[in-house]
Length: 206
Image (cartoon, rainbow, N blue to C red; front, side, top):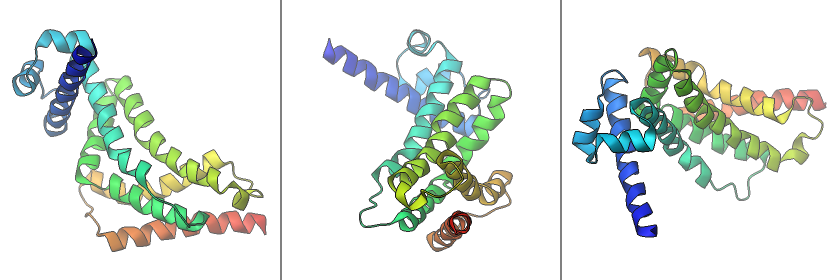
């Protein structure tokens, strides 16, 4: 039985990966179940039984793409870093992730399709931006002692920092008028965003 489940997981993973690549390239309407099966193998009945059809597979693919994008954030080593150092390191990695070509394509795809399918938008937001912001919240929680007198709730502080990172640079990339910055520039932007947030927190404390 375990072997059968393992084969099923491998099959479903391949379907999701192939479907994700197709959706990113062609959009939802530009992809057919027949094309997915042609490239991934399996059968149309599998897509219906496992995902409920094309829309279900699309949503599952969005979730997987978001998890794939956020995976590097789970492996950051904060050893020896204080709150400021931890936030700057995390912020740099967030900027690298959200400005990657595949992440920008995913953002554009999810927002475009969410108008007609709210479940797509919910899946993208939950496993994408909300999940990314949760990493900021986790760092703030670890260093709560440095923020004990701050009046801004940690949840809100995490969202503010996340939004300051993903604002202008991402809007430009989505609109096709921005460029992919090098690591040095991303690090500068990350540090500036953290400095602004912490300056406000420290001014409250003072």
